[in-house]
Image 1 (cartoon, rainbow, N blue to C red):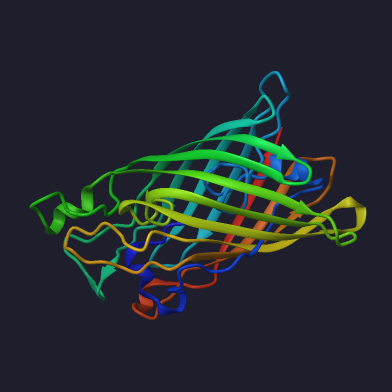
Image 2 (image 1 turned 45 degrees about the vertical axis):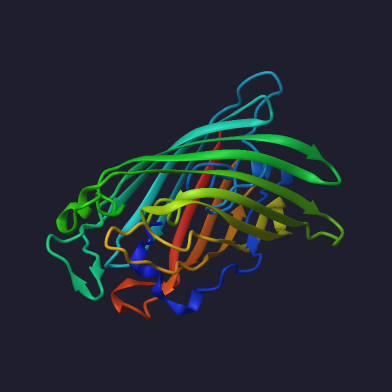
Length: 312
């Protein structure tokens, strides 16, 4: 999801916190679903934000790997983005994994409506390492987990000027940033035949839009949340309708002393699990980040996203 700094001038999403939303979390059974549903960056979770569950594994060893693929069609000017993930569970409460983020497109980023020279090519690929540990599992309270994400090997993203420089040098800086987070997940079963999943967390981050827009000026605490409704369909298939939201650092690290008010990112999505016999999840979603009010070229409103997760 390459959503760049200049995209976020839109006044539509300048609220500090955008309510809870609907997620697509559980497949055929609530615990099994969470354990086989990888998010965009690799941890088990929603499309982007993590859940408190971990990839399935036995109590005394490693589980079988879970693989995932996610795709975002961000538009002609920004390009398309894919992630390929492998996540491994351990001892029923730990997981770790690797994700490769790939950008397709030869695009240029206009700054204040003008393409700078040398042009800022939106061609960043980067790598992601992640880990998570469930620290509490209680039937009444739900689950609580802590985790971390480290992003690296992005050699082109805009990351602010080196001290004392300006101009073309800003277009060739690497990005290294990360998140640490605490997340809680609870399933409410009080409504007959329609379980509801609540997910909320707090992360500390120095990444702008999960590293897709570069670095933030410093480390800050940001909230995220999700809410899911799960429906059972014929032949024991499952449909989950929902959305998620995540606060972003308010500013991007810009070497020219500029600042941007970055809005909360919102994803509306659905997850379909065809059969309880197979650990397969099919996700479709819509990303809303900016409607192009400040720059029509950078319209990232109602952009389609797609994902697959499969547990061996």
